[in-house]
Image 1 (cartoon, rainbow, N blue to C red):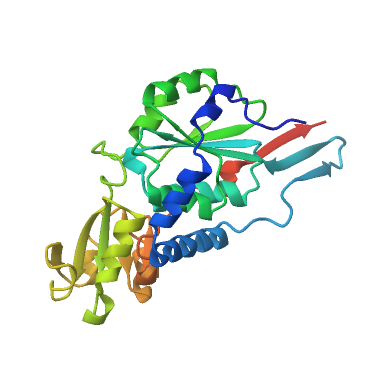
Image 2: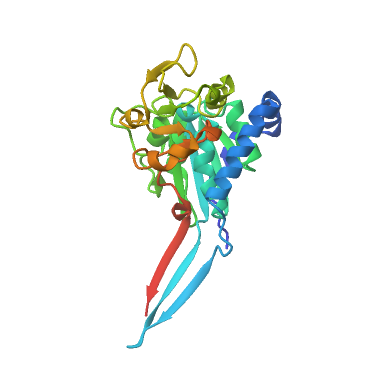
Length: 294
């Protein structure tokens, strides 16, 4: 059975070639590649592959009849990214659940020339995802009208332009919940950082965040209000005061992670600077579940 996405043949002309992947990889330093590998490993463990990916259960009922329950990975997944989501952290956290779930074919489409930056391409290559294409917005809209998946699958859209391009596609779709203010990610996302002691802040912490989550708005909190980059938004307050804010994600010392999770949708330890998780996006989005009664 052929499980491939029925994408137009002319799309291959927009594929990212090996030379561009190589240029992106060379542009990354050892520190950046190490960051990406660390994030990929963390997401791999979080969305650990199941030992049995496809299974069918038959249940018989005492009064007669029964049911069949089929579970298997989706046949395909399409991850569409625009320039507002040109972030290794955001892209990897959407891609990895599909990879670990055993989806048979995955393609990534960048909309616009600024969507597939060197860091994003390096992240995709390190994750083993090299089926990547680059389209302009109008080309992506035409693709959405012409794509005819042969079997079950899902489209994931990161960014307003990506969502707009596939808005009329009659296909299963996932995208982050829209913010009340309508801003795109990552620049529309807010990250709160809480530091207790001076030794917890280093310049590298900010550099790691900037690489994995470029453009994210950050507030640096500490009891003294003096920790964090000198020109950054620094706030004074204890952890209960910090917890009254409405951040999309927080970076906190490990001892506060459990408490912070009661308030914030994404909580990261200080050694996970720049990492990201999409709340609610799990391997279940990439599994087919069919039932039959007889």
